[in-house]
Image (cartoon, rainbow, N blue to C red; front, top):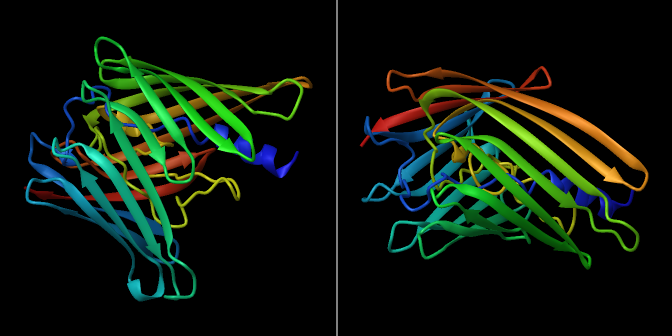
Length: 306
């Protein structure tokens, strides 16, 4: 398998999930719960050796999320510093996220940079998302303003990868996501990857239900598939995370993928579960992620009144 083929194959499992709430005309600009007037103050990712990565949120006078500063505890001087800056249009719609990582030791390497851009249709729904290094996604909706389909595009080394996706909602939660992708080849029949993911949810408040993209700490993100594989891999939203599509918190996701080529087909399955602790407002205060029987992430949420 060539490096290019591996890169394209990796991309197929990256470019599918993304976006925001099903009805994009009424964007929520403050992550948290508007009913209880609680908003996210910080997210803290547990690390080995009693360390942690803290993402501290700041808001403007209108309550819009305008910056996240990410640093390591207990000593922020011996690790990278990260800054996420948000831009909104005159209708309070998210139009851009710029995420910069200042690496450690300071000045030893160039800063890392990634950028998301959001575009809207006449109805105020998200029509497309662009990621700095070549991802392009466009969306389609039904009469109920729910996201029903999307198409993804990426070009590399003269080859073009395309992917079509469909979405099924139960009430306000995404319950099934299906996709079909081609792996472009130079001659012959392009291999095809089909994938179906099913989701279950709790009955509590997803604090990031809406048009949000919340980066997870470096080295996640900062992907340039011109030079290799990878995933932007956010906490919430963006182009590889559909958790923001559901009003409630995702409990499980199960994915079945099949690769079909001239040589036959092969199928793989993955399962991920999320366990939560909640506060009195039914907002998560801890999320533990388990994949393949192993804990892969533990995230803590802090809120403030506004």
